[in-house]
Length: 111
Image (cartoon, rainbow, N blue to C red; front, side):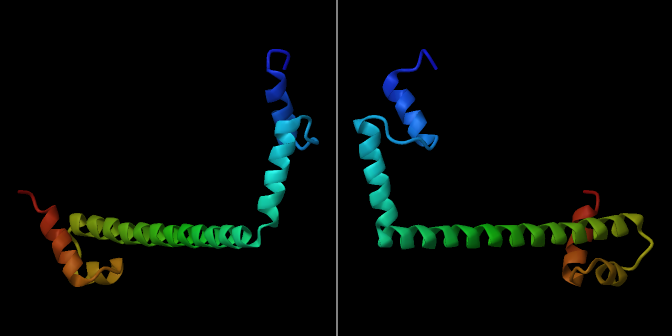
C-alpha cells in the first residue's frame, strides 16, 4: 500500500468500514447517509430489487420449461429413430402432442 496515493488509501479504508479520514470521505459519508435516509429512494430501490427477483425467478422457470420440452423432444427423437413404436405411442410416452411428433418425424426423414 506504500505506492497508493494517500487519498486513494483513505477511500479504500472508508470502503473497508473505517471512519472517514479526509474531507472527501467525510463528504462521501454525508451523501451515503442522505441516500440511506431518503425513504423514496429506499422504496424505489426495494421495488427495483423485487422486480429483478421476479424476473430472475421467471427466467429460471422458463429455462426449466424449455429444458423439459427439450427432454421430451430428445426422447421422442430416440423413439422415432428406433422405429419400433407407432407415432401415437411416441406421442403418449414422450408427452408431446401428436402434431409435434409428426413434425419431428418429418424433420428426421433423410432429404
